[in-house]
Image (cartoon, rainbow, N blue to C red; front, side, top):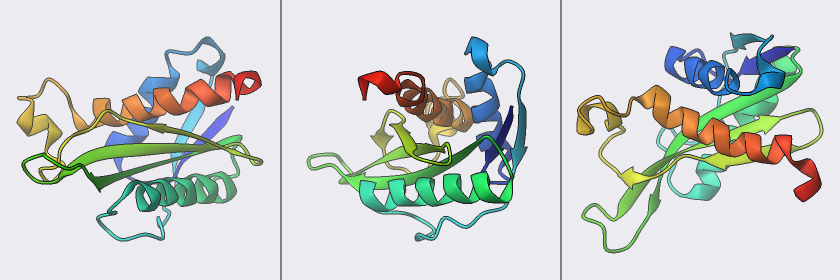
Length: 147
């Protein structure tokens, strides 16, 4: 099975590889990075823009990578009242199978310029953070009858 990730960022490609290795049906895969444009602002603001960027990357990865599945990962911030910065950071993962999208989000943290690794003293890396979104998107892909 060929998987295309809509990025050339090694951390995001590794997040998809690491995430999929945990699923028995995805052990024999080829994962490639494909240069794509998210079609949204460099720093997406709001869940709508963040998810749109992930979906755009997933669709383009699927098409340009001539793959079985296209993955798009997009980090963005969204308004959360009563936090110190008023915003939290999350990563959206969109998986495109040629017909529909399967979406997931990572956990969120107080926005601080995407410095999750530094802020957690290396306990959570950016790759691990992105992998959370991959797992949450896989829920829908693996369980279509429930959705």
